[in-house]
Image (tube, rainbow, N blue to C red; front, side):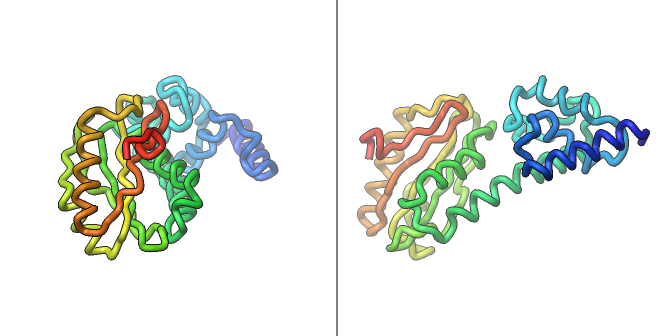
Amino acid sequence: MDADHKGHRQRLRERFLASDGHALPDYELLELILCMAQPRGDVKPTAKALLRAFKTYAQVINASPAQLKKIPGVGDSAVTALKVAKESAARLLRDGVMNQPVLSNWQSLLDYCRVEMAHEKTEQFRVLFLNAKNILIADEVQQRGTVNHTPIYPREVIKRALDLGATAIILVHNHPSGDPEPSRDDIDMTKDVRDAGQKMGVQVHDHIIVATGGITSFKSQGLL
């Protein structure tokens, strides 16, 4: 690495540490991540190319490995570093909600769901399991589907809740289209799970739809 690039990396690290990262624009934060994957050379062009291609920092770290590798200069090491950044963010948020009373940490829960699911390219359906004190005791992805459909089996959802000793659940799924508005199928499926749960003493607290365009709560919409 020449002296200019070495000095630039050092200055980036110093500015990052001095401000806890807040002083760096998105492309420079990406530079630091890429520096860990590529010990030598200038990674600024690659960082800027990633932002041009995916528009935002969040879209970059949520892009698939295949999409990322289309950008010149991005190989397995760079993809790994970017995915470590995403998983680190998700784990920080997960630690803030697991084994905590969910209803008093609602915004933290929404933030966690957004990071985990908003940028997924196919639908996934997860269930958050709560105990009698509304403490989150488990978070599980139950199904993965296509770009606009995920098959859900209400009896299996409730059976899993009973297996875990949960007395309440929160349903969460994403809309890859970016539109968080519930479909007729979403509404009908939610009612099916609610009805199955009522028979077995498991309450459905809410159904949350996560998308890049926002978040919809069935409870706040009067759909539960």
